[in-house]
Picture: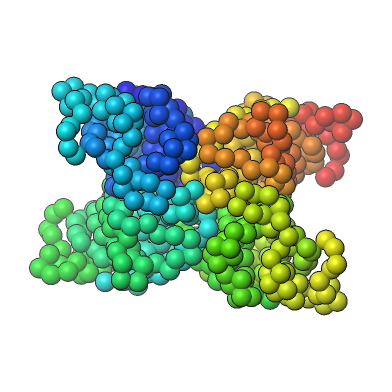
Length: 141
Length: 141
Length: 141
Length: 141
């Protein structure tokens, strides 16, 4: 499981003094960038090859609030990888306290936004990172 | 079903030229504010009474991209209302084209963030807006 | 002077309950889009011709705070137009109360970000909108 | 001069592939938080005492664009400190390349937003950080 540290910025906090809920999807994205870089898939490089990862579905559960200047840690893991799509799951913690969980289903698209299959190397890396018996790349999505 | 018009702003579009996915949760919130105002529940007034509606869970499915300067319409409806929580569902369209759907589960909290029951008037209005046989306020959540 | 109405969104307000200062630059941009559209220069169309307006310099003075759900009005006027750059000035009001002022100096660039001269039609429209004796297009910037 | 590293996030980049200009004011704010913490003025602590630093004026000049995933460094210094207000200046670099400069004039306010004098300790720290002969705290603003 990959950990990305995030310090809560002032502009991320709402009038209740807590991190505004859409911002968690941005935190997931920051964590995703670092996770993919760590796997060997720097997203800036992936985009240069003409493949983008579009968010097809996203969700979050908010358990406890985060506040300005909190030091958070976002853990990221890939839970599924098919031929054209993969799912990442996230947990946001402040020290040992779980604040939020979430997921994003991502699909490979070309520069026009049309769905394409995942580049072979990306799929190998992502499928290899799926924990347990699910790690074998599926023949079909 | 309530409709809120939203014009896509330049800062809401990413490097692919499409609206960045977390922004839809902001669009839902804008639509929610207008929907609640229309129901008789101006959120600025609700907050002055010491009750806030915290987002407990949120999700979105992204079907087709929206682009800079697009004129979108967000439809909002309440699909469930319990004693302390209610669920709103959203659909984002450009003309007749469905671009995204989503939901938020909201819970009443006090100014310290502690869960409380929905104010009676709010619950009457929200439960009354649930379509069909589900409209009767449940005795318990 | 062109007026753009803006309703303050919940995510634009900080922990003090007031609109977060960088957001005014976004309000200026929203007002700029509407102002240019009104002049006959829809920015989405300008971009399709390969010219972009890059912000070269921006500034704001914050006089009084704006709050959640406030109905604001942003007035926009072009104060200078040279061969490659133009300056817009903004005033943000809530009813008659002046909340903030600001400006942006914009420069025409091509899709690679290189400075170019303003397209002739754009310059005619912008220079024609400069009030008073300054309205005559300058021979040189 | 204090340095704050900032990695450009995907949501901070516009459709031209460059960091959206209002975001620099957020970068300045992130750098300001780290700078003040380093001076001994953690802003979260300052706010707990009932004093806030409101932005009275802000400005930026954009020299060269920053892009997704760039590693930036923001240098911050205090250039003036009066009895109730102080000015910070910022420079944003990618390696040795200067991308943008800016400033914010900040004023101490109470929780109602009314101007107040800077807390004595804050003023000592800020005035002590002004470079050169200007370092002596002025008798009056």
